Image 1 (tube, rainbow, N blue to C red):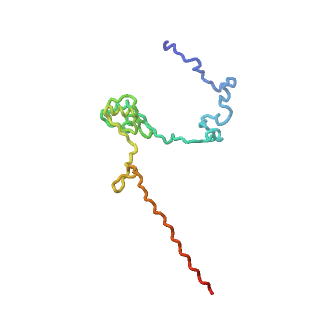
Image 2: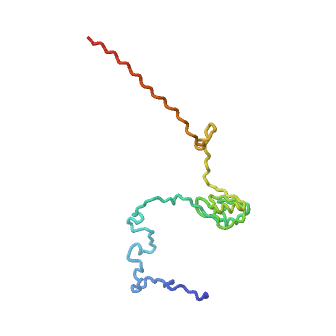
Length: 198
């Protein structure tokens, strides 16, 4: 097999469709554009999904359920092997990644992936690290600093110096004092009969 023996597969190449060559050519007269109208004009373009003004199919179909894709976190991936272009002992962050062309476009942050081998000691500041990337960076004596992470709120302490109820160990509930027994009400003395009025 040599270069001059290479040929395209049969059927891969077609003759150019010759339009407007007469009605007997099969593609004459209207040249495949149909009758007169919007599509017969030069420069005409109809957006995808447009159905001539009627209610399009995408609006006729019911929408159900919930899609959480709009609220997901999108990271720009940076492989570990690409970090070898930085100087040994340097501190690299998002600004350095974008200046070196390793991360382009809009995103919620940068994530370091563990593809490849790191040969330098670096202090890497990113929004997320894969498990393997973190192990390789720390294996070279470097440091992984997560930026943009939500700080854990320490439990509040009471004004008396003791810890809050959430941090205090659960203690056994105190025994409730027995309720005093109800004393019977004293009966009222019967009223003396009134003298008959004269």
